[in-house]
Length: 82
Image (cartoon, rainbow, N blue to C red; front, top):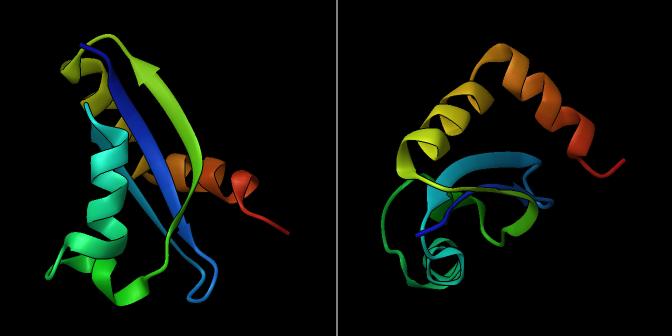
């Protein structure tokens, strides 16, 4: 099973969100429509600005953790629309 690390961006609020999943389509729907609680509902709508595929959960979790560090946030800034 492949895992996906994804970065979402809310243009309206200029916010980013990093996560990982094995089902990107369902997870994206959850962030934008289905979920009724949590961080992402306050900043809808979201769009996917970056995805990376990993062969296992451990690798995906490690990458997600990195992207949430200072260096990872600097990398994410390079992906944002100007």
